[in-house]
Length: 281
Image (cartoon, rainbow, N blue to C red; front, side, top):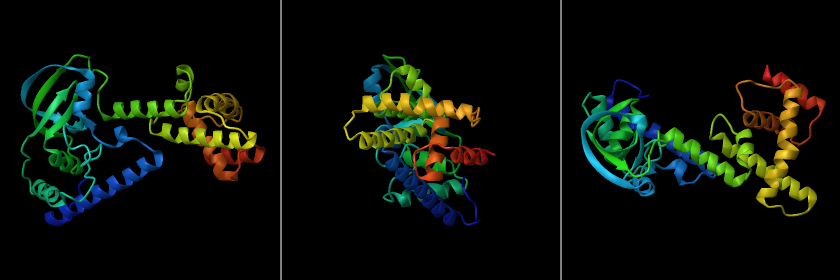
């Protein structure tokens, strides 16, 4: 949310620094999770329409659109992240001029977007979208061109769905299990899938070290699910460590993670169970 100190120019400069700081922290977290470009950049309009096919287009005129439905870009994929925060200080002066104008109550000129399904891709006006998001605005005026695709774009309902799909795919690549078992380890927050994948890979490394042999991902995933995940979930239930707001995947991350932090080892005993119960209260 935009801050107000009484000096619009100083506030505009502060707005830019705040947004850049958040983008840098987000990029660092993505690097730690080993995310690919799908998770950290705006969606590519070209890639989306190439995948869905283009049947026709029509001018829908000027409309007020939901900023959260703006998920991608036509040509500025690397200048902004997926939340339209600048990825560098290259256009700082331009960004701050727009922020200053917004703080002085001046209206933005309409942006230009392509509409695919219920989502929008920016053709012109990336900086205006960026500033509007930083100001905490929920909507923006746009000149809309609707693209009718050959394949129904109904599944493209916004950035959240796209990110969820990305993280599910990432988890499946790193922990290749059958669909039913993938559902069993699903997390309420898709981004936690990357953490779960890291935990499975770490478990697999310890297993290979213990057995002095190399195991591929399929074998590690299978053995982790049977030898670690299932017994741990059973123990969580038997020990009354269940949180009904969690999935089994969430519960495994919480409890197995606390086990490691508590004793820096990977064994279960009564002391660990006692301390886990205390931490839940």
